[in-house]
Amino acid sequence: MEKLNITDGNFEEKVLKSSLPVMVDFWAPWCGPCRMLGPVIEELAVKYEGRVNVYKMNVDENPENSTKYRIRSIPAIKIFKDGQVVDDLLGVVPGEEIEEKLKKVI
View (cartoon, rainbow, N blue to C red):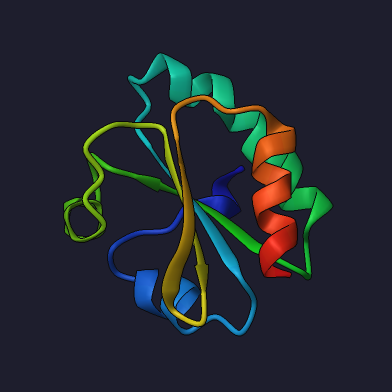
C-alpha cells in the first residue's frame, strides 16, 4: 500500500505532529521477516483507520529517523502518541500482539 509509506521528509508532519496515535513499521524490501509482517501492517491500517495512523518507513531510503530512533534490527515497530514513542515491538510478532499495544494508545 503506497499511501502507507513515509519518508524522513514528511516524518515530522505525519508522525510527530499527528493528533492521532501513530504506528510506524521500520522495514526494508530485502528483509524477509519484514515482508512477512507487511500484510499484517496493512490489515491493521485498514482496521484502525481514523483511530491510528499506520505508516511504513524504508530504513535504507530514510537513514535520518532510522538512526534517531536507534533502529538496529528490522522489522521494528514504534508506536507514537503526542510525538513521543510510547511502545515498540521488534521482529515478526503476531497481529494480536500489535493490536493489544494499539488499543492501549487509542
